[in-house]
Length: 100
Image 1 (cartoon, one colour):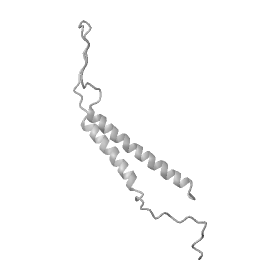
Image 2: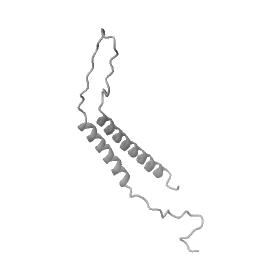
Image 3: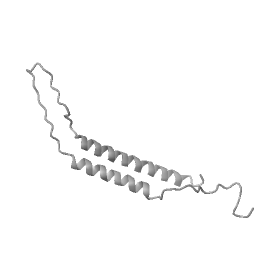
Image 4: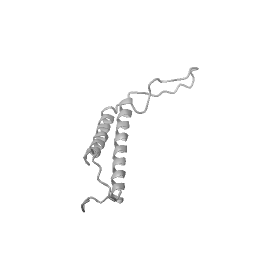
């Protein structure tokens, strides 16, 4: 064996790795897309009423403070933030333990 082939050293993984910038770019794109979707679906068309003398209960089907499009946009934004948080933790963890 030569000087470069020590049996105790771990050889670098040859698996296909994503470039370092792909994951944060995808996470940031998801955050921006979620913000855009939530912004474009911000109009609220619901209404509220109080009817104390009626004998029937009031139930508004589909009435919400946040529209469904806004909820979807916020969910996409939250998923993007989770991707960014995972990536940041992974990168900080790899920097703290360079030997592993």
